[in-house]
Amino acid sequence: MLYTALAIDYDGTLADAGCVSPAALDALNRLKGAGFTLVLVTGRTLESLRAAFPEMALFDRVVAENGAVVHRPDTGDSTLLGPPPPVEAIEALRRKGIPLEVGQVIVASRIPHEKTMIDTFRELALDNAVEFNKGAVMVLPAELTKATGLQLALDELQLEASKVIGIGDAENDHSFLALCGASVAVANAISSVREDADLVTQGGAGDGVVELANYLIAGDLQALARRQRDHAPLTASGLRPTRSS
Image (cartoon, rainbow, N blue to C red; front, side):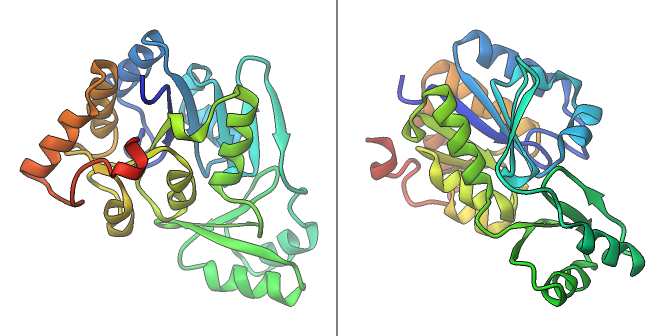
């Protein structure tokens, strides 16, 4: 089997408007039954994810907070890859009236508050990076990305990144998709993710995951590549030779 694991983004990829469809949930169960390792890679906090997706125990690892937290659903343990959010920044942003979600490592809000968040961290001389997920904006330690968290998860699972196929839709997915052996974009992905991906599904959030799962279980990603060339050519030749060797 060329790929033995699937790394998947949550919002806009697995979930549509925050919810996972019965068909997408069934696809995850079928992938597990076929022996695939599943890793969820999300910008959400674990608290937010638990509320939206009680079935997250289907995953062997959950990379949360945009790569800053690696969670083990089987034991309930988590590893934090960065320090807690700086209290002074949280207090300053709240004084400015910025709506916040505070995680174990990240501080998150939504556009159009990104400038205020960036300026506040700069004023406090805090060395943090800003990541965007369509309308969401997240501030976290500069060295952390979804790829950072995914790599730790793969190390724990003793999996090579070359054996993982990743699927996503937004700006903050670029890093973990580049780490994977092959990358897939759902149809509703932003243009840069679709252009960089090895394959693009015809279905959008949820439906695209079902589509990919069907091809993975059948062991025929080339069929997806052929379908893409016939109907929605966004890359030159489906899976790139350097990725599929």
